[in-house]
Image 1: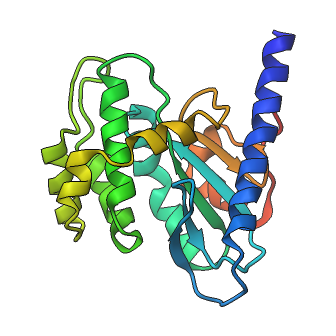
Image 2 (image 1 turned 120 degrees about the horizontal axis):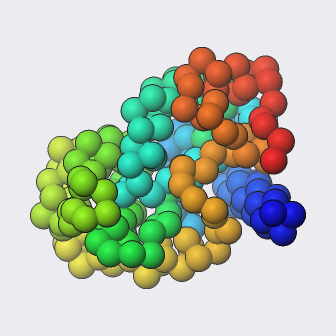
Length: 215
């Protein structure tokens, strides 16, 4: 048990460092404008990149049912707070599953997400969660045809990119660098959150005036 707690703590530290690096790499000056920006590692930052608001890192797998549940409960709150300049959100799309068909489902969706321009990415993310394959663990889904359709609904025509799965290898390479125990993983200024990550009111309190849960 002690070894496991140490491993989780080290993972949290590593994840926190990755979140800080995302903003270091952004290198933007304060503009007062909240934008959605794609970073070199594929993560998406919703923020005024020059602000000093708390950083909320969201690690999610599009084939993860618990991620879909969290998305349905708190995504509107997270996006509202980001648009108000109260938090800097970093969305990290990962593949956590090793078994099929979940792994292939996840990779196809994540690779497709990298094809979608930043202006359409949040809408695409909504579409992907809405059509998540079910039942989990047995259902194949997120076919390239479905993902092309989702991108078009989100306003992006990226058919060839989605079909070719151009970004699949880069997605897997970046995922391998993140020491996750599972998804969703939500980290607020270096502190991993628990059940409050699923509670809009509790999450807003933490972001606007509280602290994260110590691990």
